[in-house]
Amino acid sequence: MARTPAVNRDSLSQDQKAAYDAFVEKRGEVPATGPASVMLNAPEVAQRGLELASFLRTDISLSPRIRELAMLFTARARDCLFIWNAHAPAGRTAGLSDALVDSLRDNVALADLAADEAAVVNYGRELLGSNRVTQATFDAALAQFGTRGLVELNSLIGCYTMLALNLNAFDVQLPDGATEKQLPV
Image (cartoon, rainbow, N blue to C red):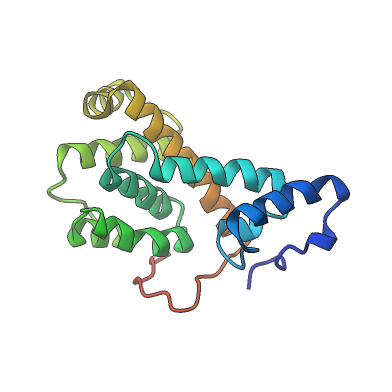
């Protein structure tokens, strides 16, 4: 169980109820787990933040394989079990090799990366490690993805960092039936 109970509409202030209602209506349910289960305690944050996450996850110019790699890299960098469990199978389906996913999970050297995969990993390591990116790493990612794609990559890493921090801080547990091998944290 998470550190806070599932949000209850009656526990919200009057000014939050419209955003809560709109979120629940659009989603079709009150989320019992995942980032929405935490973020719905601040309904405007849930509406805006999760809409951005959905857009970045599905509607940007980066390929699904690269998007999933960025999400998995961020989950691993932030030791987020929930995001890892949600995206490792999707990453494999999108074309990431089992060896890459398993090596990323186990936090071991990543071998035989394609140039676009190496660009994501190197960019993510620097950005999440030092909050900066060297010119060489920036240029390599720019060459792979162009300006638009690099802005999208940076935004995807940032957004999934926000989700991971919410999930970790509120200790959101994996859903029942989770099948992915867990991150060693």
